[in-house]
Image (cartoon, rainbow, N blue to C red; front, side):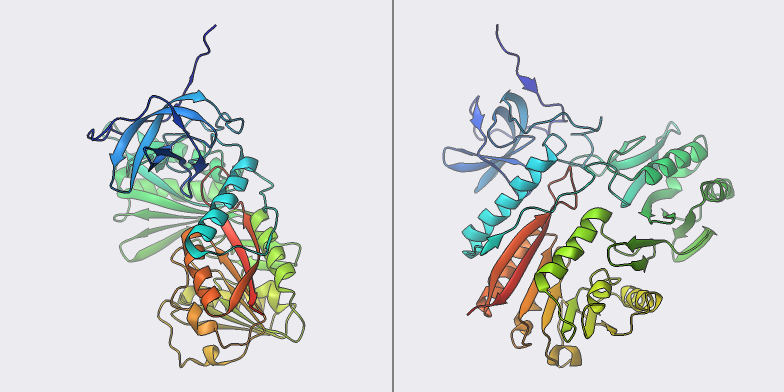
Length: 449
């Protein structure tokens, strides 16, 4: 009996203007850093959305380039053992989770292997030790922070959801499997409160931040929402017991405020208070594991001075301050510097100094950069720390821990660290974002003998 092929369920991109045709069967060799299957056709790289390593597929060309082509899966002719049924009905349509069709345990291994391959190929670097991945306790309902779009159709129907794949348009999603239960309950209640009201196109999006004690929400609008909308939102906030504010133009109106949202690192007995607009790691369990990894690898001593760069609200600074003589925390955003100082006071930590400094345009005369340190931790944004790293050469650190949310920044900055005399001695990845191609990388650098 002829075996039926599995048809990929996601929306297909418009075919590219044909410059050449693809073979009827394409063998997938690996997974790209963006989560696409990688094949080679006539010696040219082909990136196929929806394909997995080890599969044989047919695909439709969506973009033809000089160096590589792009395509989307038509049929899975021979499936991978790692392919699973997506847990979300909107997989393939929603742009939020692009690897729901790949087993999460296998996904983090593939992501790690691809980063190691890229490090070797582009920077000629290999870690001395590669540790097992840090995996997420929860593969679903883990995301405690998110931005969600709001719109209204011409028919008056309300849309609450995320952007479609490869589009700026929203897809209406009643419940998101990766959001925390409290976030989903609020979105359902918001939908019920606003359903049937007029002028909802005034609202653009909302930010969710789910703390251990309560949910904090900020709704953004083009202009002041109508009294009817504001009344509905106020009643909703009181009923749900959340912090809720509305921002429009240069104004912010607080509709309900109960207490400061916070999360707790129970392993280190530290409370972190935060604002809705503050950056917090989205996955609580992986974040705690990441902090424990930093402590284990850096091996801080009580007499150490530690420099924490891109320190944010004190995610790493606070636990490390408990284990060292002094922590100097440097951050470019004033609000986060103030938050770090407040969190230090909240936890009765008096050996942490928070400093505001532009780390993308380093002032070499600044005092913090002209002091010796035993340990350095970097947790930069996606753009990395290219301008900063050369200035770390003469600070005397016995170890530098680099935490990267963008693999290519890690590849580039690792080469710079190698050039100034540091070797990558340990490496692993942390699955901060299950169901997606995103991954955190952790690399320890020590002076080259």
